[in-house]
Image 1 (cartoon, rainbow, N blue to C red):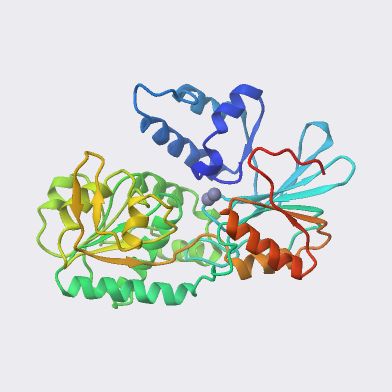
Image 2: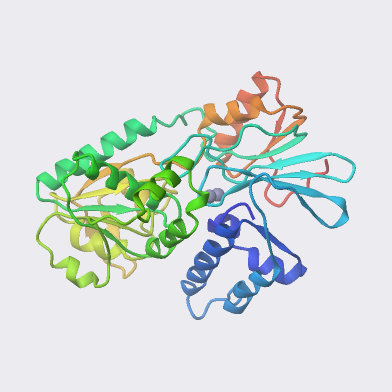
Length: 384
Ligand SMILES: [Zn+2]
Ligand SMILES: [Zn+2]
């Protein structure tokens, strides 16, 4: 398992149960995926079938084989795996496979080649690879991320203006990765004096996942490790940060504040409560922080729709300002091409984890560089 996000870990317990196999992952991935999988299971309605039980999630631990960056592990049958830093979220890896006859495959999982506040960008110093299976979330021709510096600047300027108007800023964020980047950005600009110090409330699954960033501080980027050691303080120990104990108390506050909460695409979780109370006031701001899938409330807001349907069948009319900050944890098209071009020995690239038109665009760009790329059908078996 490359990392704990549910689009990668969600079927893990069923696989380990059905195949009675070992479970290779880094310690942060094992611990965080357990929390996310249990949360996922609790969201399935009572009368719907579950892919596995709570007990089968816990049983993953019995099959756990810990892996660490750059340390080779022998598998049954003479195969070897070497995990490399993928730079995507805490504990994320790319997996390098070497067959008994010496053939090699690199599966990137999700990949970020740029440094972020929490992590070093993905490893580029890799051994020769024959077959590369790579994600292509941002593989389209339009996909060029602005620099993180610019993104952060605009983000905090907008929030500053909202605070000065007396408004509340609601930040929906994915619990693993995005939320921690957002919180550290807010702390940084409060410490530098740019942002007024207002309370930052942390709600939903983010609270639980952030604890793993404190626990696994040695997996963070070296600059951050040094800061933690020098300050002798936890990553999120800041006087402005407050865990939400009672949502009702926050809803009664009259002064400006910031909430960082789940879910990132506004499909469920505490964000819906905040949306109902604060989304209707034009002084307030809703700041989206990542990719919004078509059909989600987040995507509707991004596309300019203001009549937003709620799960209980009602509709709310959003008057709050809508912001978007591209705190992406995926490489964009130029960085994907750059990453692929730097690899030695590549015979074929297999594109996965992308929208079909974006994958086609990336394949065309690679073809111009004489790098053959293949886009498999869902469920297709490929013989190398
Ligand atoms: Zn991911
Ligand atoms: Zn993914």
